[in-house]
Amino acid sequence: MDKLLIQGGVPLAGEIRVSGAKNAALPLMCAALLTEDELTLSNVPHLRDVSTMVRLLSQMGVEVSLDDRLGLSLRAARLSNPTAPYELVKTMRASILVLGPLVARCGEARVSLPGGCAIGTRPVDLHIKGLEALGAEISVEQGYISAKAKRLKGARLVMDLVTVTGTENLMMAACLAEGTTVIENAAREPEVADLAQCLTAMGARIRGAGSDVVTVDGVARLRGASHRIMADRIETGTFLAAAAATGGSVTLHGANPGTLEAVLEKLRESGAEVRAGDGTIALAMRDRPRGVNVRTAPYPAFPTDMQAQLMALDAIADGTGVITETIFENRFMHALEMQRLGADIEISGNTAVVHGVRQLQGANVMATDLRASASLVIAGLVAEGETRIDRIYHLDRGYECIEEKLAQLGARIRRVT
Ligand code: EPU
Image (cartoon, rainbow, N blue to C red; front, side, top):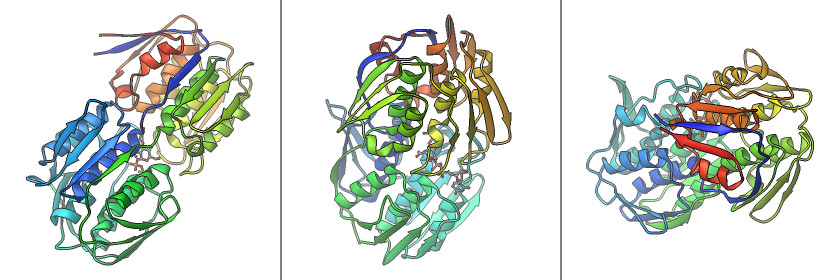
């Protein structure tokens, strides 16, 4: 199994380009299920989760092709098998995003229950409840969600809590429903708005995406479209945190600063000089970072997907940072691994108190999930000596060419098998 070897201590410097967003790409690929015409996506990140989604859609009968500029064309002219099997769903929870489009387009769907994962239990009850409110008949048997509906009917959906993929699933289903659907307490994440923009180009009638009330007037059919996937705000934030932690100076191109205000604010508070322009973010950290407090919450607040990376920054900061995780109940696994590198972190429930230390020391650590592995890469980049990160396949789920990009910024990093 692949491992990463990092020789820490080099301040990152230089320029790189940000990739397309994983968490926008996955729902956008599922939107292809809503039409028999071709959907073409550009700025597609080359990631393991994207390949998993290609496999999932292909086995349903979607024709998928890659063009020479890494654009992805998806055509769901005939859907032979509206099923998402356990083997694929267990490796990627985002597979649940096929449920809404399939039941809306085919009148039936069978999707394996995603089950637990490293960061918490993460149920899908709100996806199911929402589809039922739209008129789907749903049963859960032998680990599979079976949904049936002649034609979904618009309804008012008040979400019990803010769910990103839940909002996306229901918004996609509502596009082909009869009548109007209003989703209240909707997720405001930029990926929801990006999906809505693509659906609108496909002929959907959506208002309010990106706010907490999304209104969808259902239409009888959608057509093909071309869409450019938004920049990955979490990849952007990860590289900025890495530059800040190493005392570096970097410029990121192809970024969208407007989608990560809360992260930029925390980086500034830690002492970084951050300049955001049109599609570009430059960061320079001249002194030792200061410890910052972080509380994760739905967008536009600080994203849970950046919590681990900020913990790595706090780990070597001057002072103490208190990190509170409010989205997932088990998202501090990286803290235990960072302790192997010499970090001083106390965990109590959903709060981590991080007492910054002057220097981390290289050690062997294990990645437990995608963002945890990113935080360990950051910690490895600042640690003295060599850090070896095992189970690096987690990283490949969500970071395109991460070693190449970090090496371009001067990091001493290599992959070994
Ligand atoms: N929840 C329920 N019931 C539901 C749905 C969600 O209780 O039916 C709970 C979850 O257990 C969690 C909270 O609601 O406690 C919020 O979860 P949400 O549904 O928003 O998460 P998600 O849609 O499964 C997406 C991202 C995650 C990101 C979260 C939060 C995608 C494909 N995944 O997950 O990304 O952490 O939103 O922003 O968009 C990652 O990229 O590393 C990642 C985990």
